[in-house]
Length: 54
Image 1: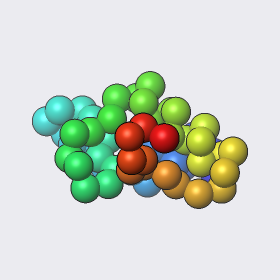
Image 2: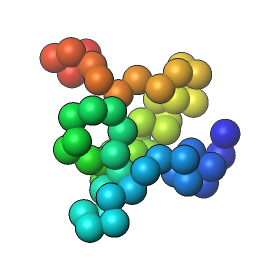
Image 3: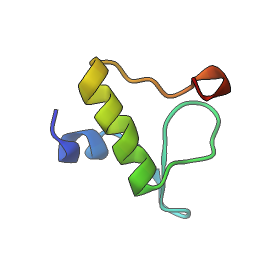
Image 4: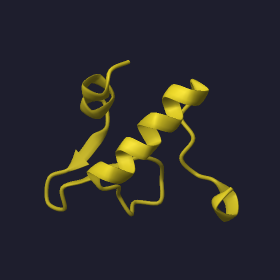
């Protein structure tokens, strides 16, 4: 999946301009979403919630 396709499939809060993934509601910036995308490319899975940042 290309970056553009990935980005287009993530809900973006129009008021805050942040991407919403998962249930924490904090939102991700463009740079943070790109990190998630790169991790997705490496693993083939979407990992968002990671206990203690691991």
